[in-house]
Image 1 (cartoon, rainbow, N blue to C red):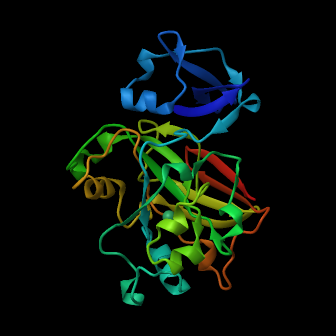
Image 2 (image 1 turned 60 degrees about the vertical axis):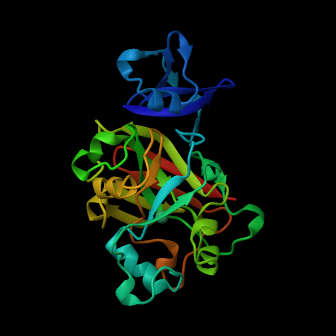
Amino acid sequence: MKLATLSHRDETFVASIDERSSTCRPISVDGRRITDMLTLIEGGISASAWSEGEPIPLAEVTLHAPITRPRRNIMCVGKNYFEHAHEFAKSGFDSSASGANDAVPKAPIIFTKMPESVTGPNTAVGYPNGGCQQLDYEAELGVIIGKPGLGIKKAEAMGHVFGYVIINDLTARDLQAAHKQWFLGKSFETSCPMGPWITTADEINGADLTVQCWVNGEQRQNASTRDLIFDIPTLIETMSRGMTLLPGDIIATGTPVGVGIGFNPPKFLQSGDKVDIEITGLGRLSNTIR
Ligand code: MG
């Protein structure tokens, strides 16, 4: 099932998506439209408990980030594909590694993005007030937690996953390098484009999805989540060891090789550029640089 948050005729609500007919159907419980995706996820409300309204053409709606405002920071994984770990180490921007031997992490590197960094599909994004000269894209698979847990074991981890979404972990490389900690360079407003919808975990296998990214139509990234250094169960086990994961939590699993700083000279994003990301079964997330 594909679930979106969208606006139609000045109303914002959650809807199921039918890609084949390019339509959506508003979801209601007890005769009332659901207006926040977290109501469904946190409430453990499944399709058998809701009703769906008449189909609306997708051409008539505006899609938002499916979880428009997460309750907590988005948890993100740094350097989680081998080839990307090496391109980052070579780029000179990696303040987390002390040399080439340190390029591939031995344990997951976790940082977070503020809830306010989230934006939807088809929005204009960029560092506020032009305070960054080196803006970069990172196409990533986002994992949405559906069931809470502390000390989740790998073997049970996938049972805690609600679904998947495309995330662009937009990064101000100059700030990421200058401040050592990645937070400031990765958490500015609009730095977390997300969408176009959530695909529920029963529909796809997160361990085998193709992640692709284009800038102005030129392909930059093309990889499989099979190549993650730390797979989804490992990430969930690691993160939940000391803190309770909650329904609606979002994990950005890391980006593959092909980011702007992987090129020589680097290909940073410029005003007017269009970034398109596709992941198998998750649709396409497009944003322009303002
Ligand atoms: Mg990233």
